[in-house]
Length: 404
Ligand code: ADP
Ligand code: ASP
Ligand code: MG
Image 1 (cartoon, rainbow, N blue to C red):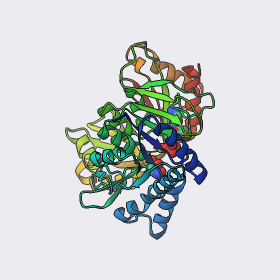
Image 2: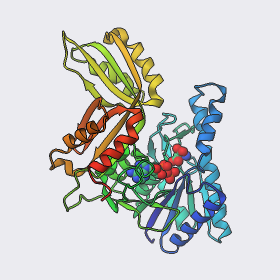
Image 3: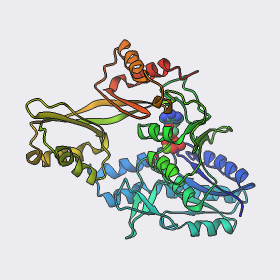
Image 4: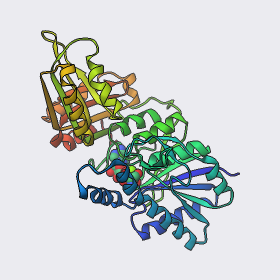
């Protein structure tokens, strides 16, 4: 059988019937040379519309029904795209998560993929039919519909590419590749021809929404080459390379930011073994991602414990922290939702010194106060005031001359 390519089309790419027609052309052309498997997102705006509908009967709709509803945007786009291909004389069939047994955990709205029926998909392409698979959707062991979190169609695509042994996964979107930062925020952001998997992991993890983090994790784990490119104009896009670059890596390759963050500080916590676990254990059990964890030096055996979570998890985390007040014995809980994270990422940070101080100086020269600093091998994350994010990203982009 000829090589398989998985093509994923995001919301804007299939945002109207005209767009769907253009996407059908891209698929038709590619199918002349390769076996194609397609994964689609909902038409742009559709998932948001469904979420608004879901919230009509109360702020916390039943989780199972919420996913049953918001997953339907992909059902519409997949069937429409199959029809568009039929109109061009191409055999295609839409498939929902349940039809290809896209098994996930039962963690509604943030379900994780466990398995998919690759044999079934391979049989379809063997019969010269192009499968158009709904992204974002999953199904539990018991048959309930789940969703994979916002932007989850990327993960559907990469997971399928891994399971069928595809040669590559192409992520078609509204920009022509991965940029040094979000081109919507920095007008002279530069498109990268390639980026290493570990840099992409950090950028996605720190908010570059061009790919969902789980998708990059899958690509990394199963060695799936990924290309990010535009469905609006031709071009080679950005290759996320599996091999480490042999040439010298840039100290800073890209900048990511996250505005939807909230900071929790437990003031006056006892500085005794087991405290961090007592606080973070129940939060991670709730499948909530915690970032930027800081514990201060203790004074009189009391300390402050700070961490950030995504804004959507604020209420759940607040309830958890309130419920462990006696056990952890903290004095006061402070919640700040007026913060954001800005991260600079670059594999060259391993070998080049002075990157952090350059970033801090540039921000201070521009009156951006840094509240928390948190570093890893190839990343520096800074927590700052939410209103200063766009300015900070531009300042750092200039400082590291990322437009050059
Ligand atoms: P899709 O609907 O195709 O999945 P998304 O909106 O999820 O598209 O992701 C594409 C968007 O990601 C771009 O329009 C851009 O604004 C944003 N983005 C953020 N950071 C980056 C980056 N470093 N490079 C490219 N795009 C980025
Ligand atoms: N439609 C879903 C969303 O808007 C999934 C995706 O687009 O990847 O988040
Ligand atoms: Mg997306």
